[in-house]
Image (cartoon, rainbow, N blue to C red; front, side, top):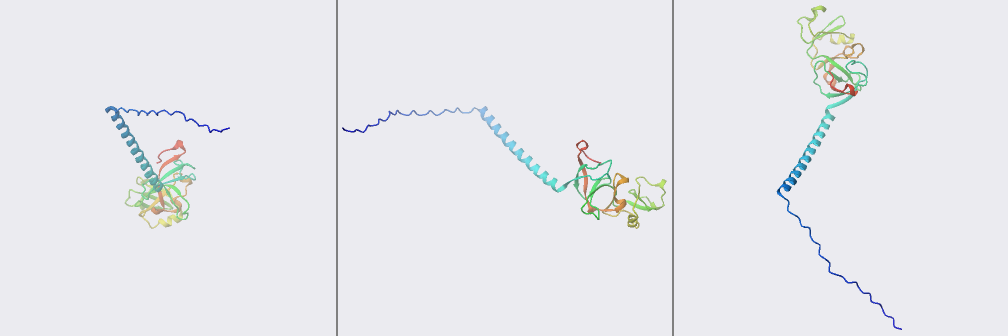
Length: 220
């Protein structure tokens, strides 16, 4: 018996048909113009986005270095500010009369007070039986004025004896010093008790209350 190896017939392979390349029609002038406008719009949007991000970054840096947030602890500034109100403070040493400022008291460097500026550098001051008179219109002879003759703008406050001693030799509020008070005069620890405030003690002035939301806005 003869064993034969069977031959495997390979299937018939036909010729591969060549793929037809899709034909691209040239874009019309109008289509080219639309594409160009689209690319220009995308470039503009990228530029605007980058500019906005840069502005946001600069604003964040400015806010970080120039703005402080505080919450009001106590009722010394009522009714203007209430306990637990949250406020924004712009860091500055230059303040105006009647501005609301935050400051560090002399003997309590870890605390921060919020008060209103009543007396400015150069204001005339005089004492009478424990009362301090402050006036920025400079009367000629303040010591001789009677109560009914006080010039417009004169403020009269009762001060602590130690503060009275501190101010006894002064005719004006010195440069870079301020007299501050709370709006709630009957419940405020302020310059009547601890004396004049040096400019270096001032952190900044209030610009905005942001909570509670229904009280959001500028504060005068």
